[in-house]
Image (cartoon, rainbow, N blue to C red):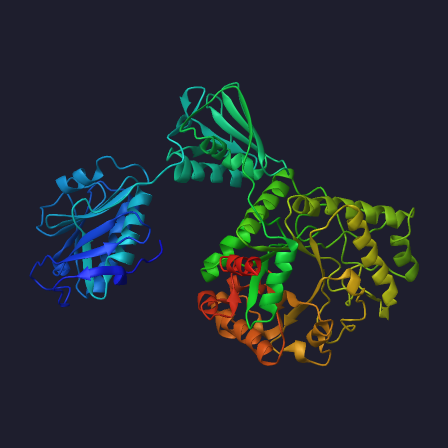
Length: 628
């Protein structure tokens, strides 16, 4: 919960700040306006807080025991006086902080009428009562107490009815054929979908607890989710054989109760078959995206993000969102995902439909919140032995004849190339059809020798015209598919030791923005002999770092050592050095695993420095360009 800070107190009467441990009990009224608009709080200053005992129920679950113990430590550290802790089985003290459902009458009175997510913080006589309808609600109440009622050596507690939080659920209840939804279990081939629906029912819709099942057993009724559709909004809910089958996208299957809430229903009873659609969010346009990138490009700030990709399993946007937030306390402003061999593997058979749907729907929600999407592909090599289950992209397309055949209609290589273009293009078109602009970064690192589209082959350099023909073929193919909202990104590898970054540039008419892939050993290589970044900036197009990572002696296998060798603060200093040297940036994406801020450490300190723009800041940029 965000800190509201008692600096928002409107009035303090005759308040003299003394030690928390003073033996005199003084009631001093303060008025505190809750910034969320829930209520105005009249609170009492507890001058002798050090004499209080933290009390929980003798039969508390382990979670409440831990909550009470941690709270006692927090408030003791705050006061500089060690508070006692005990259970309601022992004798009563005059001064007690009652945690949860104790046997004290003050707790019982406070608990009356509380729903699962509701809580109350109040002063009842000389007892401080912190109660909630569930363990999670009690934890939230404790957090609010620590954040908002312990301030500048003061502990203040709401008087009268206290601070009462009543969760406003979107629905009263959900039934299925007159049977309470809590009597069902949720099962899906996608366990993320099962867990998400259960969480949303508990947190948002009704407060009902619906268990998640890993397997289905006879004699149990289930809500069975089939989240495989790539159509974001529609769903179908149908009762068959005592189970509720919900089919649709990852989004619509996990939020189908929203359909009933939007219709104004409070008591939902699903019978037979119901079909509906969720409301579509709104998105920024391609012009607005370009305008925001241009704005940031001319500031000494940069939009920071990370690649979703993984080598061993198919990752999802939520993976990187959680990882990035855990590392930095912020959400990334841009996310990149490979729809080829290091990601969704769309031209293979490894990616199930439920993962395709989840990735797409999570990206749609991310864009609706202002996040920027970068798609790229490690595309399968277009050979006659193209194997969907064993896609090769780290191999050489040897010789000019093979390069020419890829873009020559009717040839074997052209047919397999077009097959991959079509499959991947159809996925990109899902975004385009919803009006979501994405940055599209094909054939990255083409000036090197490790991908089949690389122009350095067996010690020889393929004529640049062959690569230009490849790029333009894809460009025109996707134009014919109607992909109007993609931003084309030309992204070579840092040129030190490789072919010049501009050698393969296909021309201004086929490129919207440019970027560099840079893996550093700590030597600030973009300023080296290749002058890679400067040359890209000379195109006068918005220039970015599309893939950043570390190597050599500055990459470590242990997190603690990594923090001392190359941390997020070193990364921030590298970006600041670029600004100091006159380089401009709109966005930068790190790779993943050891090439990400999650591994490097000091992410929160880095994000507090003001250099990087996160997702929650981006809407302000979009609002500004719309206002012009």
